[in-house]
Length: 107
Image (cartoon, rainbow, N blue to C red; front, side, top):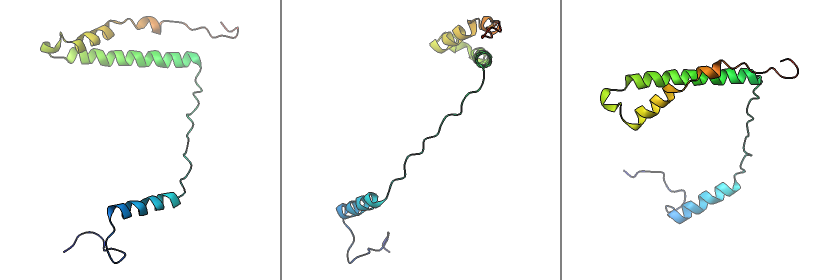
């Protein structure tokens, strides 16, 4: 039992004929213009963006701290553990305590 489609003509197409037919079909097909999406505009104020960024940093630091604590003893001296410990040792609470100016005479 032969596999594949039956030839449309009297004989099966060669690879070169099949490729030529494919390229002709591609030339005739009108390509649709690419769709470009705009990023949504961030409407948060600068102080709000700052607070959100600091909150994200604090959350990441907590995740890295739990990862560092979960490392087994035999991995405590490798480069990953040292990098995690450096991140945990950063004092990000100072960023959280900053009072940002409101600007435009509202200070």
